[in-house]
Image (cartoon, rainbow, N blue to C red; front, side, top):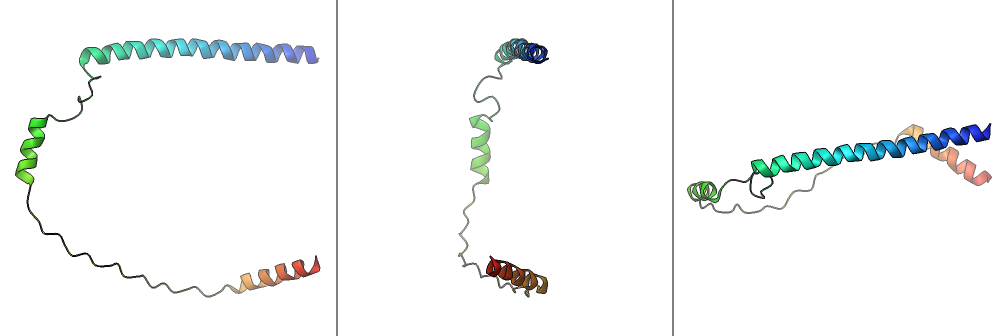
Length: 103
């Protein structure tokens, strides 16, 4: 029976490797096609998605305004109230101390 299980395992390993190679080939074909189309339509240029320098220089020259910096104030520490201890936790702590003493 172990010979049959070994044959089945080897079959699935080889099937997995075949599918891996097949889908890798398909992925490679699609990446080459889409890469070619991207180069044709100019999507591969580095500055394609950025605005031109003319548009940014016009906006930046109009929107520049001189503002005085606000004086920085140190943040105030927040005061938090501590919770009251839970009486159930005291019970468990005492039980843990008793276990530690017993061992």
